[in-house]
Length: 251
Image: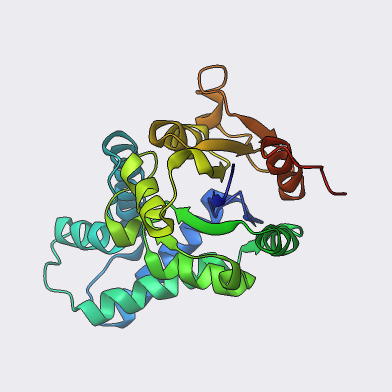
């Protein structure tokens, strides 16, 4: 009997409206301008190139190690590599928030996200979220922007706990909070190598959400990682769960 559902955030409950690389460059430029205005002797173009390189390199490292390296940690490493070792926490944190706020303008919830969460909660399911992200505040603001917080508890962000999907431990944090065994919980996400693999390693049922899943990362796992179910819209999820629980599917 399924009693709990864990959701991924990006490309599962929310979608990105822009061109990712172009928006990233704009965000890094915003960060550079803020740091320079705060008194750092910074070549903005050199910083943007360096920080972009750090983010790409550590993204690969995150995938291999299943641990999280925060945006703040990478920013400090990047600045030190550029010969800027003394930077106040206040300036760094304010700069990162400015950067992420710019990115957040490009995210929006799927139209059926709130109605689906509301329906699932009304049907008695416990709902939570696990998001791989380099900044906890970024995720928390996105959830509030989309008005999704009332349905989600807990909300676990890799930047806040130091590990990331597919590490089974991050799924166990939710199971412990809910006091539910793995076979009573489902993971819903868009990424085969993190959401689906992590759920399988932790013993959870899993649903692949394919609304924005046409990515090179997923292509690499097609045919190797087989989800328990696949949906093309969040509104399909209640029917899948009803079938698994042996219930009559409601329209």
